Image (tube, rainbow, N blue to C red; front, side, top):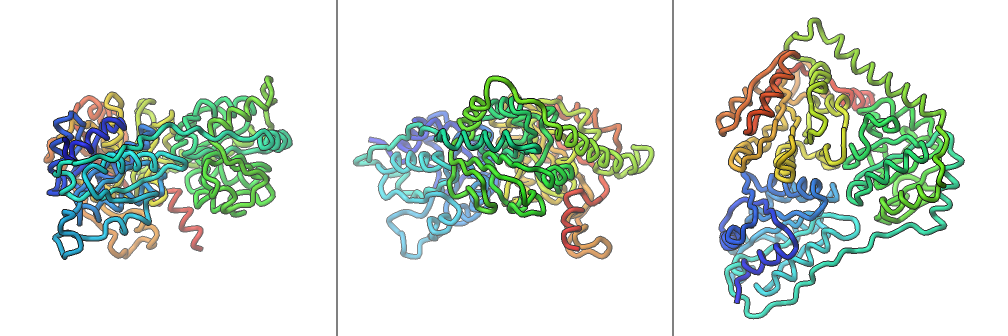
Length: 554
């Protein structure tokens, strides 16, 4: 007979959950020992929110469910921020928390709290097994719930005595089978082709559904066959590289002013695997042309037409739908659209505007502290194309998102709709764990870095050689600008030498303050073989993102 901990680990192995993100605690000792004995990869971190953030990023990077394991009570409550972030990211994490012993439940036990009730608002499903033998069933059910339909997090609370007790009987595990992706019906495909053929200024907007359905190659074939221009967001960034002649960057005017002009002129939007949410101004006329027709393709029926009246709703898998549409468009590629030249001009004008900001930032470019635009245009020259980027929060970061291109599928990870600043660091650690042979760079502000600064220890202990680039303007830059500068409130920080902090944890780093130092510093970081932090002295300058927010308040 086996203990609940041993059954948990055996179920993990059967579900191919081979990496465990955790932070040790009394409720977990039995299961952690069993996992170590079984050879499970254990990445133990320094804060429970970092644990669940890392699981979220690992799931998004691998396109498979990921497992987090934290102790109960405050360990569980700490983990909720990462779970909520995964919920809005539609990320399939299985968030497991230990808890007090079943034998003393509801009797005022230490750390006894309603963990299931706390988790339910930010998960697809939550439950608690009541005997050791039920653990495999509940874990396999959690896997199926997280990975079916529109993906998302699930939660299990497991009392500590269930891990240590021997199972007298065992419930059969409901190990999930692969679900069949939904294909579009013939009528919808025919109507979509009719709308597409009549369009003179179409726009395709792609979101995370492209990534989850593994549709990046089908998206390339679709736009190349139809000649339709493409804008990408969330996990679709890089599915078609930004330097592809038909890809025009973010569908977000806060970072890509060219998108506003293109969307105002469009007569058809084909929105694939992307919510019509705040990024698309909730479908309002301020961004999407009010006279344009709209086709929305999404696997989740409740998203269709949520914030914008649709001319065609297709509830189906993105990959299968794009494949059917390309086939239905005929063997011969469609002739080029005249509007493409306009879009290229809009994009060139926006890039020239950003370049002018860098050029006007002061001569010579060695002038310190660096203007963020100067920094990112120089960084752009030296970043290897295959680099995986983890973007955190802060005004410095928004400059980078506007200037640095996405170069390939799975190389661009953002915080997500909850905007959980600081999560970029645990995200980067998970990306490096998922891709040990790839270069991972996190870009963050000095304010955001502070949330999980102790994860430098995690990076060093687990030999995860991420490169951290910190824009250091000694403050909360975006809030400074939103407060109007001058006498700000609660916005100022110390000009800390974060590279020295990294060295204290066993990594390496350096401070730079001129453009000529950027390339050599990045090369040293990649060659170091240990986590490396580049502390960049920058000026606090309102990014295009913040300028947009300020203008919207006037």
